[in-house]
Amino acid sequence: MKKLLIPALLAAFIVGCSSTPVDETSGAPVESRSGSSGVTPVTAGGLDSRGLPRELTDPKSVLSQRSIYFDLDKYEVKDEYKDLVAAHAKYLVTNKGFKVLIQGNTDERGSREYNLSLGQKRSDAVKRSLILLGAKEDQVESVSLGEEKPKNPGHDESAWSENRRADILYKAPDGRGEF
Amino acid sequence: MPQIFQKILFVLSLFAVTAAQAQLSIEITGAGANRIPVAIANFAGDTAAAQVVTTTVRADLERSGLFKLIDPAGATLDENAQINFADWKGRGADALAAGSLTRAPDGRMQARFRVYDTQKQVALGGAVYVTGNDQLRAAGHRIADYIYEKLTGEKGVFSTRIAYVVKSGGQFKLQIADADGQGAVTALSSTEPIISPVWSPDGGKLAYVSFEKKKPVIYVHTLASGQRQVVANFKGSNSAPAWSPDGRKLAVVLSKDGNSQIYSVNADGTGVQRLTQSGGIDTEPRYSPDGGSIYFTSDRGGSPQIYRMGANGGDAQRVTFEGSYNVSPRPSPDGKSLAFISRRDGRFQLAVMDLASRQVQVLTDSNKDESPSFAPNSRMILIATETGGRGVLSAVSSDGRIKQRLSISAGDVREPAWGSFIQ
Image (cartoon, rainbow over all chains, first blue to last red; front, side, top):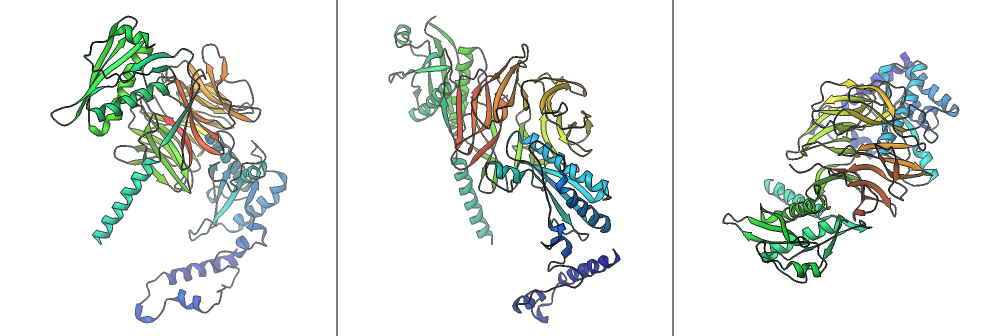
């Protein structure tokens, strides 16, 4: 936990520097210098190019998986997603400065308002699991987007099953989010 | 710089005009069983103005499905003309309207008219409406309302307004139009969804749910000033606003204490009180017209069904029993019936329950009906539905006989809300 905090502070420091005004006579700003060199900057200590924990953003990491899918009209977290939810809970327990926003979604069928409540039930179910596994109440907010923001705009079962979903979005201690 | 600003304003105003011209077009199917044959003579006086007014009156009456328009065969009659009742009866008209449009000294137009019963050979009444030259269609709607009331005994809704949401491209627009879909204006544009608009009882405000803060938040929007006030933005979701009949409170759905539960809140956002205490979903509250009870949707019995409780909460009685999905309850303004959406064989259809007999009638044969909204005279129900993969509005008479489809060429139309009678 201490190991992670230092790079996070360092990242905050770097961000702080680049936002200080640059004197026009002192040459080109930092951004354009690194851009013209054709080099992708890497920060040491497990952070990606945006300064976010690679553990959360690396496609090879289990924590980059953020979606939990549900059955029609249902809001129970299925067994196949228990490990994924547990991994996210563990990350929140270890990294108290991080918060998550859980967005519940539904397919397009039925009442918009009922679907908004159904999406809320889905995000609440994920929230409850995270808290049972040790995440703190103030680290987790669950909201619903109902049927309003479909990931797949289609009108068949394959689209609908993709849209019956809760997504976990992280917010970093420095306020950056949602990623 | 100011010049550039002026140019931008000019472009914006051009855009506003274009947007307003994306009118709802209306298609009518079906008609009432016993339509009243009525003739609207050409009104005398200012020809151009008279034509706008009579065209509006005829279209309104025709669209209601309750009247059969008899061709006046070019007859121009003012409100004082001698009526040859036998002649009009011979043409099949049971009723006749005649009138005139004249310019008042102040430049405004005066619409005078009289309505006759050709069977009894008497005048049923008449009126004078004074109006600006750009408000001639509004005068036509008021004349149509007058004729409608004289001939059917109930108030007309041609002068009322509707609100709805248009989704086009990535844009959501909350629009207000006349009940015939004309004169659309945009009250709110957003890149995030807008749902569940409801009119305040005085017709001056809309409450709705906007996702502009990346989650559902309830606003009250004063239409004349454009002023918007957040009335519920608690942790979690805030949705499903419904006005109390006196306009002082809103029933809302909040998830701040866990599940979606029903609360009441003053119209300014103060005084939040929890009304339901269930472990499941409670949503879509609507006050009964007397303000004494609230109808709502709940899955407390295992599937979403409609329940009724007192306006301050307490015990709830289940109202719907047929099928496994009955949602979106809307009590009619006359208190006699309840419109809702019922899932039957996987299709979502508009149904109406007679509250005295508990008899349920399915009114449509569609797949994806949503968001019913009663006309203030309880005779028509506006719904969102889908044809050819596009969202359209449909108005269905409470007996299911008359259907009108309102569509917009530019996008999906949804979330209709029919406003109250114009005071």
